[in-house]
Amino acid sequence: MIEFHFKSDVLLKDISNYSDWVNRILESEGYTTGQIDYVFCTDDYLLELNLEYLNHDTLTDIITFDYTDGSVVSGDIFISTDRVKDNANDFNVDWKIELLRVMSHGVLHLVGYGDKSAEEKKLMREKEDEKIKMFHVEP
Image 1 (tube, rainbow, N blue to C red):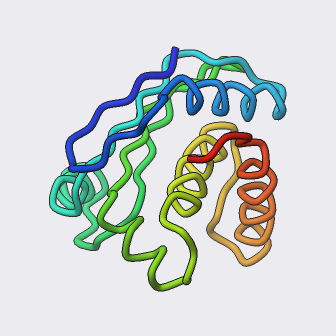
Image 2 (image 1 turned 60 degrees about the vertical axis):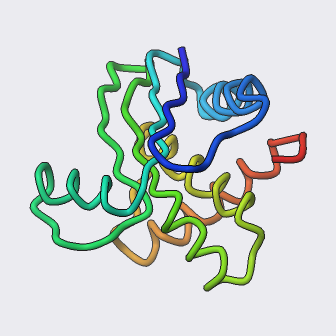
Image 3 (image 1 turned 135 degrees about the vertical axis):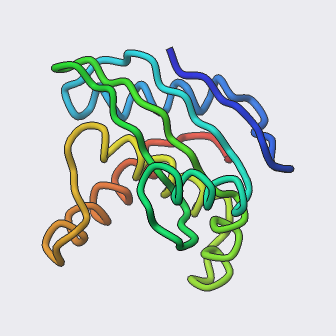
């Protein structure tokens, strides 16, 4: 089951479209959906999590906690909508597309893709682009 929680001023319309999309991402990678919780929050909220759980004193757009068991994907995905908006401006892309990028990024981490090395980052970006194209309705 995929659930969405909002702790910022951003609310998604037609969340069933997003749930369907995330399910299709997982299916395309050979996984099934367990319990995935997306939490859309502010920079301050995510910074507190970053400090408490990762001991990082930096802003970030996403933190993913992985509870995957075998091929059943579960996790908590925290997304700073403040960072998504700023990144969209910095990269000159629509914020809705950047939101899809970050949402898919979290799921891709849950299925095992990394982003530490240059090679991993390149593959992650390719996978993000591939998964964004799977979203068939206007975000």
